[in-house]
Length: 540
Image (cartoon, rainbow, N blue to C red; front, top):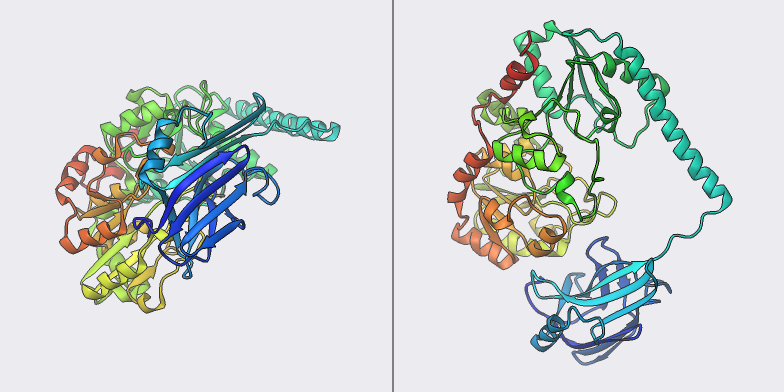
């Protein structure tokens, strides 16, 4: 595990374009590699000379990447042992001190900088991971875009023209049907561009309306597409545009680009049932200066007449993130959390979850480990599996007759390398769709930066936060509040500390109740009814 310093760096330098590193490994290694923590790309290091436990390696910044320059990223020096476990490398104190003293000076032996222009430069900086003091090489490689050929320019211009034409046609069609929008009418539209059918908060609202019979007061329409990048067919787009223009109430639950192109008829209500609980990681305008931030003067999210959240704290967060007036954001609760207070649902769902995971039936404790993914987006998503101490977990679980369900983020496709001898104790639950249903059988949650903490806190059960890369994640992703101040449980950085906390039953459980009080205005299972009564039926 990374917490054990098995590989030591004793000296390093960058001479022009060649990196040289001398070190020592306390364990046998198959090979040394560079591994990018952003994209999870691995580059093998071939020029390594061994003298017993000591090694001397060198590589060319301009050619290691299959005879091309190493791309931008945070490249960790990793040793891979005979069991294919990853071990990071740790500089001696003298090197750490030298790198920190000279970190702002590009003219030193730890860094390299070359430039041809403001748009074409290459920068390599030796850095120390603030989480665990391991070494990595930060590369910034800027390449000017190649001039487009005549045909490429024509193709780009054509795509832009067709997009603009599509938006123009959408707006014109919308404005035509808007003329038929009846003030104080009863047309209600459920819509989303990120699912193929109604689900999430919308489904809870719709089902509750039917249970109460209030759906009879409306002409209800639906319009969905599975993915935000999917294109609607001509008939589907026409149908959606007509429904959108003629609706008196529009209910969405996520970012939906089509909603932000048009001006709605007077009196139209656009209700955003935002899909996430609480105010955890930064989003929208809060990400200014970081990857994924929107344009300064964006129209995105500005059309909502009401947005529902779980608490005033979340209201302040989303007002800042979306650049909308806080008076539009109402703390009525999150519909999908109502099931946690529904005894009938609980009686129905627990046997179903146990049937899906029969190993938990006779366990004294069920632990769920639900970390979030690493990487910049879905394409590059991964999780550092070497940070899961399967042997340590397995021994603990056997000792205490417990079972661990591991629920990886859907973006992570890599299978869990669970040792055969522990497969009855450690269960890969990543393919189980509804994590909220799994919470009903969970006694203890272990996570890092996942928003599932909000839902689980409503069960008033303990949590542990295994944040082995907290400093880096906080710098890259950002949190609405300082992480240590926000999370409702003990934070640990190493697998040894994690298992020690499990053994000692040291969870800092006293943080859970204040967390719930701060993040939920209501804990009564009536969020859906409040939204129906105060937002949908308010003029009925």
